[in-house]
Length: 116
Length: 116
Image 1 (cartoon, rainbow over the protein chains, first blue to last red):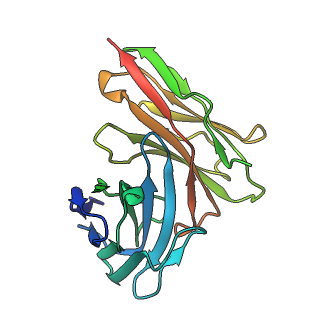
Image 2: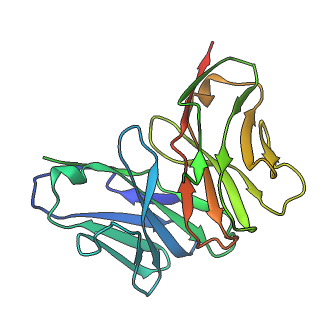
């Protein structure tokens, strides 16, 4: 149980385009989902926390207009990187907090974004 | 100040031996949780073990145990009987507060390589 999927697993796009990444909790309902970014050989940095049905809370330094987060249901959150640039190339990982167990975040497998 | 410090960028261990990965943390909140995650080359984050600040006993999960020394603010991970599949990045993380929706901060990680 407690499986989180992400789609796509990798994406290459041209500079200036927008990319949407989906994060789904497959076998549980997630009130809260988190979006992280990980640059090569670095740690995970929290970008934002999203709660179902409400606006996401962004960490300091993360542009909310550039990284649009929508958490429309208890099983789906999306991150849209708008007008992507090469510096946005990174590994994006989501995690979900289950309703039953709030000690543990269940992570998705990540999405590798490359912006040319 | 760094909230999570992992001072070992890389570690080697012989197969079947035990290894300790260091982690120290910094917080003034009396309620917090400590986590260890494993990240293989595929990128997914795998939850290993959790220790709450009020837990009296050190957490154990199979071959993983957490050596929790509260006064020293230390939360080292001990892996017993190392296996080749244990080769991966290991991240220590802390949540300030005991509520699942609260922010988790990650250390920079330790790369563990198990030698046959």
